[in-house]
Image 1 (cartoon, rainbow, N blue to C red):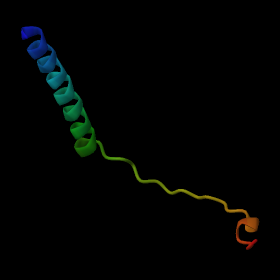
Image 2 (cartoon, helix red, strand yellow; image 1 turned 60 degrees about the vertical axis):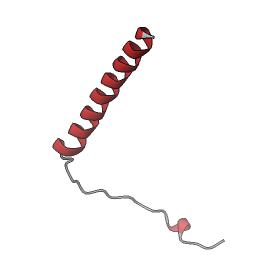
Image 3 (spheres, rainbow, N blue to C red; image 1 turned 90 degrees about the vertical axis):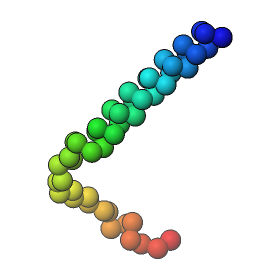
Length: 48
């Protein structure tokens, strides 16, 4: 039984670290907005 608790503790710590990294990336990293130009060919407007 102690090995089960040790395994669950290690899994909980790893999940906590991953959650912390995702939280930090979501809140502290700001994406740079940039302009995007997409050319749409005229045949996409034709109804079939």
